[in-house]
Amino acid sequence: MSLVKRIKALCDDKKVTFAEVERQISISNGQIRRWDNVSPKSETLQKVADYFDVSTDYLLGRTEVKRNVDLTEKDEKDIQKELQNIINGLEGNSYAAFDGQTIDDMEEEDKELLIASLENTLRIAKKIAKQKYTPKKYK
Image (cartoon, rainbow, N blue to C red; front, side):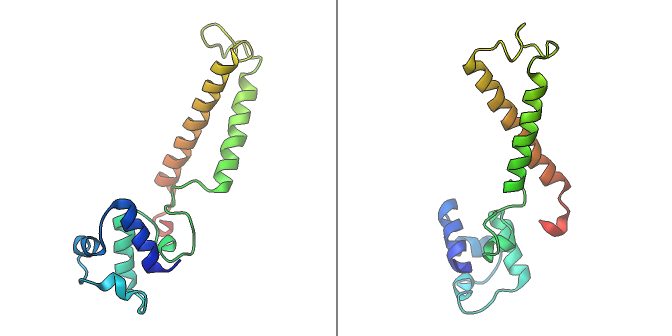
């Protein structure tokens, strides 16, 4: 997908036009459409990326990850591994009781809800950590 098509898709998602984006980031009218034939300056490309909260690599088609805080496949594997470690630590542990029940004694639906909650918590924590500790040069 070309740069202009990617920007068009982002405009469609955000329900804005090229003209609105160009006004917001202070570039000349019609400039984005010209990027089919002429490469933009890096500063201008960065302005567009910042406007849509995506990386310049995403705009250029180098990656499908829109933001650095998006979770990668490796992050997902790490989350699943950590979740399994937590569940294993809870099983058979009388110290980790919920309403007087261990995880082994819980009804299946309650157990699934607890696991889903833990997984969501791990996912949020991973995103916050990536956002907070990723060096600026990689954003």
